Amino acid sequence: MKHLLNQWQMLMENRNRFFWLLQAGGWIGYALVNYIGSLMHEMRDIYTLIIILGAYAGFLLTVPLRYFYRRIWEMAPPLMVLIAIVASYVISVLWAIIDNATYWEIYKFGFRPDSPFFYLKNSLAKFYIILSWSGLYFGIKYYQMLQEEKQKALLASSMAHQAQLKMLRYQLNPHFLFNTLNAISTLILIKDSDKANKMVNKLSRFLRFSLDNDPIKKVPLEKEIDALLLYLDIEKVRFDEQLEVTINLEEETKQALVPSLICQPLIENSIKYAIAQVEGVGKISIQSKKVNDDLEITICDNGPQLESDPNKLFRKEGVGLNNTQQRLQSLYGKHFIFNMSKNEGSGLCVTIVIPFETLEKV
Image (tube, rainbow, N blue to C red):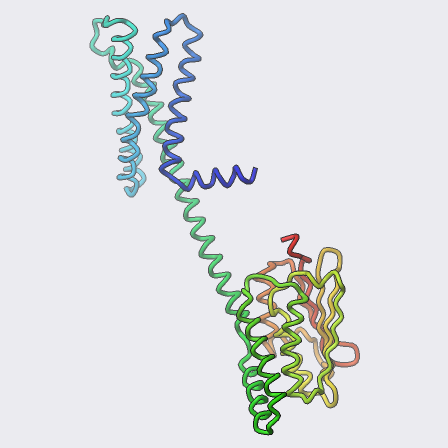
């Protein structure tokens, strides 16, 4: 069914092919209806030829209307409608003349009634048919135009959405790079080349992960944690190993898909506003679990005691937290939870709840 809908959509987009398909199908249908109608009366077999020729004449006469209507498409609607009615009447008269001439010459063997108006017989009925053809043409063309504008709007919206996601993902805090390079420089000055080399390698791998992964696509949670560990290993050098990281992932959540580097701004926020202010060992814990059809990720630190509602940090400390929330909103709409609460003892806990997805389900 989906395949048929896709083929129909492709056919609709090819306007020229779609026109000829409808044009041929419509006039074949007209011929069939007339043929079925003729079966109700005693008509000679030759009448079938009359029906075919009449449908063929209608087919040929309406083709120029298509190109004529293209030329008047940009006119004011009232004037365009008036011209379309006049054009339909002219075509219907020509069709009636051809149709009646064919009837009298072939079916009546050249016999003609006394009145010269016999050629205009049924012209009013044919006018209604041509007018209906014109109405269908304008209706379908207008519908195609609306669909085209809708697709353009959707494409523009999609491009803007992708640009926003990329902007949010690439807002890496320059302080992190500055502090890391500073730490590497210090290690070089004290001639601790081994540690400096390890730090450069970890920074290189972290930045490679950041650049290689499309911010619009998602990565397995296990891969996301690997990138976080690279980041945390870099930070451990700055804190002289006075940074303790605990990771506890439920096995079934390791392959769950998450936005790449969605947790990095939260870890960075913990280090900047919590761990850096702690005397002794700074602790960060990362946990994940599956709750019904959702993935829940919780990041906690043992920073200073919070005196007010943690959610006020959105306004106070801004970029990292707001960045994360905006990315989640762009990716999941209303189907996510981003909550901050006080950690037991001291510090902050950030909880993210998103739909549980794996590569098999996507």
